[in-house]
Amino acid sequence: MKLLNRNLGWIFYVSRRYLRTRRREKGHTASVLSVAGIAAGVMTLIVVLAVMNGFQLTTIRSILEVNSYHLRVTVTDDNGVDGALLAKLRGVPGVTAVVPFVDVQTVAQGYFSAIQAISLRGVPKDALAMDPSLVESLKILAGEFDLSTPGNVVLGSELARSLGLRVGDEVTLLSVVAASANPALQSSASGESRPRFRLVGIFRTGFYDYDLSWGFVSIGDALHDFGTAGPVVYGVKLRNRFADQAAERRIRDALPATDAGRVQIESWRQYNKAIFGALDVEKTTMMLLVGLIFLVVGVNIYQSLRRSVYERTEDIGVMRATGAPPWAIQLIFIFDGFYIGFLGSAIGTVVGLFLSVNINGVFAAAESVVNGALALGGPALQGFVGMRAGEFSIFSPSYFYLSAVPVKVVFGEVYSIFLFAVLSATIAGVFAARRATRIKPAYVLRYE
Image 1 (cartoon, rainbow, N blue to C red):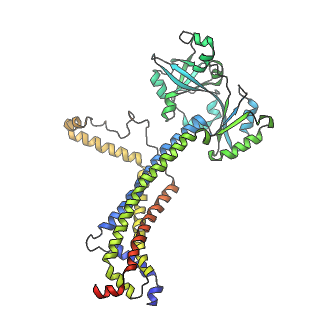
Image 2: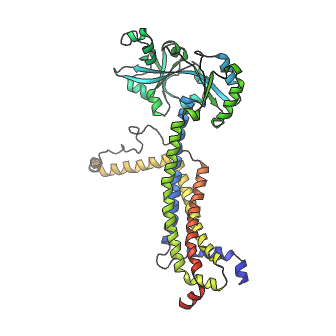
Image 3: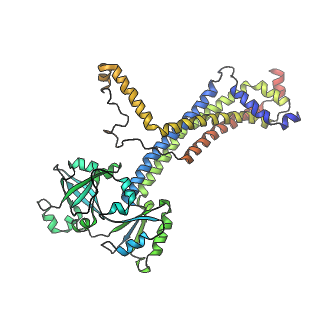
């Protein structure tokens, strides 16, 4: 009896034996379904979060690298580029790039008669050299990013398509603010003297809003041709965007005391607070909804282990009669739940990581299978589904603005999912094992 109490290895042996042994009525079905449920939940949550992270990080990168920058420094009473301020900002530790720019709200008209409201950003002619990360975010599809000649403009791919423009075509651009403030521009708004620019480049960021409504001109054109009163904004890129608060303090320390009142610094967190907050809520909601799988599976494991306790009443009575304490009996079934959770989590993690890394290949294989079935089915099947062989696409460019599904696996999230799945199964085992402590060995040995 003392040996039984001291040698706790028998607890692990019995729990593993119970997990492998066939049940009286259902065999291994309950355990297999429990493991499969945990695996399915882990796999689904890993794949969903990986794809969601990919889409969110792509959106965040487009916003930060193309539009908002990490910090925006504005001098309220300065209507031109301040070379001294530009040099001071570039000398701040942690700053990788500083680009002065001016945003102008305009209307554009191209080959088609319809006009479209767009946002023009006036940047220096060497903006790509000043900000190397902008080169990675702006993929030039046609022409080049050349703003060295006055009157040149670079437009987004969707904007150029909607205006019916190709490289070399002329586009009419008119600032709404300038026209309302300048009588000369008001009188020429419908005449031949409207400002005309030459399209020299077409870019694609992968972010639909920018590709549909964004363009670039030289900062000189923005200040002169559109009547923009400023102020010029200095977009600051940091080596680590999460160190924005420390960088803001260093920038303020680097500026003279006389500039403290007229310099405004805005972080990417503040400028994009609404959209980034919405992305966080979306991700949290999706995690909670998919995480409900673990609640359902946990209830299933609880019922399975509770049934296992009932079926093994005689075994429990014998172990209790030979000196096994109640907590040891409980540990047997708790370990059963742990084994189920660990095995299911391990399988789900491996499969989930494989699908996440190869998600585009999986979609391509599914498309090939469907298109192959349409080809084998002949005209009858193709007419029934309204699609010919080779036309099926899960993420068709006609409906989705992407060429491939972006994926970003965050191993901290994968680790948390794994632990949560194991913990949910273990907790189910804890509640199921409480029934084992109520079994009286004398009653079992007498009546069973």
